[in-house]
Image (cartoon, rainbow, N blue to C red; front, side, top):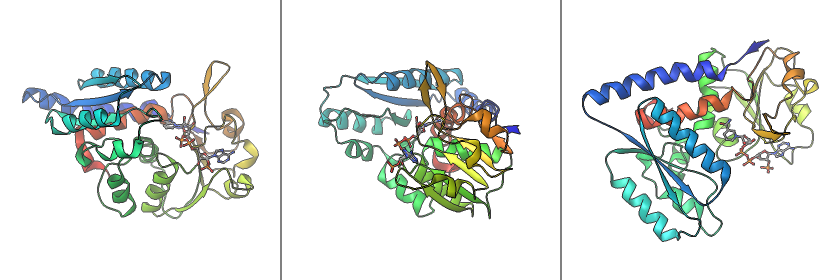
Length: 279
Ligand code: NAP
């Protein structure tokens, strides 16, 4: 079984990002990633901090715009308007979820399409689904980066995706389809996941249920990508029973150290290169 090591994939992309930022520094260009953090959500605060740390480590300025949970929708829109007009701000990354009194999609859609580094606006989604260049959500991009790094072909393969969220499952399905895979999407109403996963050349689990994907669900020689992040007894685990599935699969991503390790780097790459890399 081949371990698909997200840290190696991230290191490859980090190198390219660092080179671009160093070149800009010589021209006295200092791009900024604006991270929007609203309210008290702990995982969001942790993700914002770790995002900032990684950005700084490649020489990218990253500012956390920390606002209290009772901020009004209009105030939040005004903040986005300001960031949209600041030339130094290359990317705007809102932490999710936003407080419940805020219309999330209204806020997201206010982000300038050229700064929508996590591909969250309706216009980015429309671009992806109509095959135009644009920002693609970073987790699906990370999965594609893993396929590319390990030269795993998708054309003609049957890809089964577990999960249909707007940020992971659906964009992933479209990206795999763009690479000429045959795609099946399963979700909570799918009666027998195993019926589908057993046929798959590639299984991508993006559900958020620890240990959902077991050895008996996998065709021998399949590739298994684990997007899930779950906390079990103080440990971070994926959706895939890694030890069991490793016995039958040809290749598996670990958790931690798999997709998540690449996702952060995709945010930085999007910030630096804009949408030019995404198709
Ligand atoms: P989400 O919005 O909660 O969506 C979960 C999806 O899983 C839904 O489509 C849901 O189906 C489906 N589902 C739930 N229970 C199921 C079951 N028993 N069998 C089959 N499908 C089931 O989650 P998300 O934002 O897509 O994230 C998915 C996972 O990826 C989470 O663990 C999250 O933490 C992780 N994640 C990781 C990264 C990373 O960088 N590695 C980034 C983002 C998210 P319905 O649509 O029918 O409800």
